[in-house]
Length: 331
Ligand code: ST9
Ligand code: ZN
Ligand code: ZN
Image: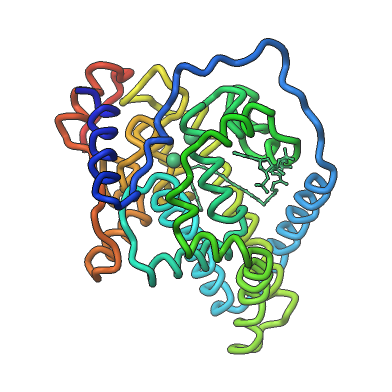
């Protein structure tokens, strides 16, 4: 039995139990055929201007770094880590892939952390991400890496989506997200939560508690931290779809990229992840270069998370032998 079949069977069992806690709409679908002709490219000038301003602001934040107090630098690191978790442990491993289960308090924390990362609301993020896995490297993939590094990195946010992304995305099974009140609440109050958590909180905490200037508070833990988290995330779509080994499946583009794994707190083992998207660790090697897995393990230890899904060693070895590129090293 292939891992996809095993997983489908597992998901069926869960749904029969009424849990609706798993998704199989993140499994690659090779039946989709792209239409003839070049994809349309309609620039969205509002996004081009805002993204340019954000990156100019981030450069200004870099210049301000020497004048920031050590407390502000530590706070910037805390904000980086919290917002990154909102994407990795939250939007990605929990809500897009349902690779573990989280209690209400943990889901509330992850939704707040996700607003701090300001990467579209969880529902939209998970919908785009499922369609990315299901139709990877085709016109129906929102950040199709076959359109080049820049498109996969940020260009996809600066143009209208390919019609096939929307057409295929509308057919996805998203009832688990719609049934999650935390996800729907965050979607309803998304703009307010982003202003408060992505910009106001990072700026005001250093100003109120240790007298940092509002300018440094806004441009360092606010704008610079936001831009770095965005770019670390986008590198998974660009660099980790272009550079690295493919020990698990040489027939797909996603790669193992340790540099990306480091900056994206564990999300750079992308050949493994696209081969086994339901594994909560997104890697065979547990917590190695993978702070997100360490966080989820800690949440399980405290009882706030449970039912982490994992791929068996036998399944990995069988897959490596069947489709790997020969670069596999265990451990
Ligand atoms: C950002 C997101 O940066 C980053 C995501 C990265 C994902 C990475 C994944 C890698 C793995 C995980 C690694 C994590 C690592 C983290 C490390 C941390 C250190 N299905 O969108 P619209 C429909 S965001 C179904 O306007 P346009 C839908 O009906 C940054 N339907 O399309 C929709 O209406 P609604 C901040 C879909 O007009 C309608 O179409 N944000 C789908 O083509 C229109 O949708 C930004 O910069 C779908 N997939 O515009 C800009 N998609 O949803 C945000 C659409 O309301 N985006 N529909 O019912 C935009 O401005 C626009 O989306 C656009 C396209 C201009 C890009
Ligand atoms: Zn990918
Ligand atoms: Zn994924």
